[in-house]
Image (cartoon, rainbow, N blue to C red; front, side, top):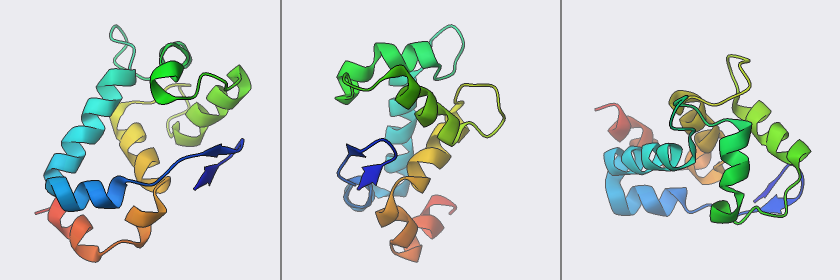
Length: 110
C-alpha cells in the first residue's frame, strides 16, 4: 500500500488479528501508540513522531510529510494524536482490515 507522499508499507494487520485475536491486536495497537507518544503529553506530537522516525523506518521523511501524517488522523484539530485517533487512523490505513472478515470487527466488540 502507498500512503500520501509515496511511503510504501505492507499491511500486516489482518494477519496480526488472525494470530493475536482482536483483543490482542488492540493491545498491540495501544503498545504502538505508547511507543510513539510524548510521555509528558500523552499524545503523539510532531516532535515525538520526528524522534521516532528511525524506529519506523521513515527517517527520510520531511517535516511537511510528518505534519501531513498527523493531520490525517487528527480528528479534534489539536495538532496531535490521542490513542483513539491513532487507532482509528491505523484502521483507516489498513485496506485489509477495512475489507476483512466481519468477525474481526464483531470479535472486538464482544
